[in-house]
Structure formats: structure tokens, C-alpha cells
Image 1 (cartoon, rainbow, N blue to C red):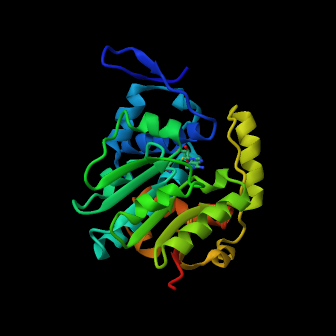
Image 2: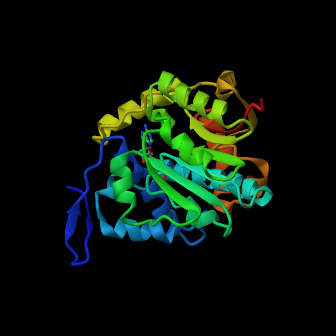
Image 3: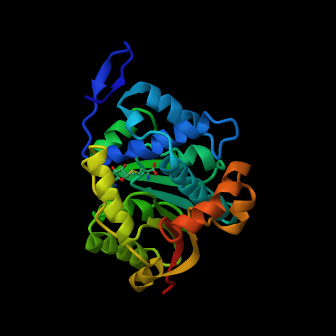
Length: 279
Ligand SMILES: C[S@@+](CC[C@H](N)C(=O)[O-])C[C@H]1O[C@@H](n2cnc3c(N)ncnc32)[C@H](O)[C@@H]1O
């Protein structure tokens, strides 16, 4: 049974739901990237957490999936940094934060931050992360409404990140969550990843192969179709076709591989930055 080490070096049990366990996919990818000679991002805390949690992360082994996940995270980091350059004391809301360390990567000393996830994930997260004056952790589903009030107590403007999360919700629930954010936070930025139906089918095949219980539930062939929920596309990117400014700063191995990957995987790993409508 997965666990984390306690002070005496033993293992404490960690009980996570099937979807919650998927937090180990990006965690393992960031830890693996950190060990590379010229990493796209550095995440020593991911390495530390993996060292302390008894979980078979090897099943999310190296390979293209790992690079895709790290690229996705790095693209979102770059959007959040650009937001903070303009709004150094704004609030970033990490929906379905898992064991993400984006705060550690982008903290400018003034940003406000809300990390939101389901109660069992947050119980695990609290073993590694402490709240502060600028950082709050909330145990709730993105489908609840109460957490929106916590966000409203933080200073605007707001940037909502939902990375690797909404895809696990049925379409109507993903749409409901986004509609609520759009309605309550006009002018906010929202970054999220979407996947077409054929990739959802592939994920289901792989989940069987890797004996993973969690299944993607929501496919979205065209991220622009989400504009109907009360937001406008600010930047449409994909992992294989990142924003231009971001691409220029990539390590050489990514700059060489991405054009080829894009030819094979165009439109498969969309990541889109929206702005909710002003009212
Ligand atoms: C693939 S992980 C992504 C974690 C994190 N965003 C990252 O990139 O490292 C999916 C996360 O979504 C969370 N999650 C799933 N359903 C959720 C819900 N209804 N509300 C909030 N979080 C949810 C899970 O607990 C898990 O931490």
C-alpha cells in the first residue's frame, strides 16, 4: 500500500482515490526531468517527495508521455510568470493541484496562491506543504461552490490553472466548473488542457495496459468551442506547438524533436489560455 515515511523512517499509509493517484504521473515526470543535464524545469521538491512516498512511480516510466507532461507544465509556468510580471500581487488558483510545485517555481515574493484538490489528495499534500499568509490550501472538489468564496477573499486579478484535471470529469461537470468561474471572476485568466476523442480512446487502452483505474471522461476536439461558456481564447497552443516565445527558450533536444512530434501529433495535446468575459 502506498505510504509516506514518518520521522522514524517507517511508512504511513496513503489512501488515494483512483483519479487522485494520477497526481503521480506529473510528479514522476518532473522528478525525472530534474535529473537531466539540461532540464526544461527543475523540481527538487518532486524528487524529495518521490523519495518519501511509497508508491510504484516506475509504472509512469520514461518516454514521450513524460516529456509531454513536463512540456505542458512548463508552458503553464510561462503563462503564470507572464501574468505575475503584470500583476505581481495577483492570485493564482491551482485547481486539482496534486503535489504540484508551481508556487515554488514561480513565487515572486508577492503572489497570492490557492491550491485546491480533493480531501484525500490535500491530506497527502499537507505532509509536504505549509500554508502561509500568501498561500492557502483548500480541500474541496472543483464542483463545489464554497471554494470560490475563498478565492474572492484573495486579491485580484486572478489566474485559474486546471492542468490534467478537467479531463477526468464528465463533460457537463467540466462545463459547469468553467461556467461558474467565468461567471464569478470576469476578466480572469484560465489555462487548461484538452484532448480529442481519439486520444481519450487511446488513454482508455493504456489505462487497461498499465492497470490504472482512472479513465479520462471528457474529450474536446476544439478548445474554441469552450468560448460558449463565457470565455475567449487568448492563446491557443499545444504541447507539440508551444507559444513562440516559449519555444525559443527550449533546450535543443526539444527544439529538434518538436517539429517532428507536431507532424505526428498535431491537435492531440492542446493547451489553451482563456480570458473570462468582462461584464
Ligand atoms: C493528473 S493529476 C494533476 C495534478 C497537478 N495538476 C499537476 O499537474 O501536477 C489530477 C489531479 O486532479 C485532482 N482532481 C480530480 N478530480 C478533482 C475534482 N473534482 N476537484 C478537484 N481536484 C480534482 C486529483 O486529486 C489530482 O490531484
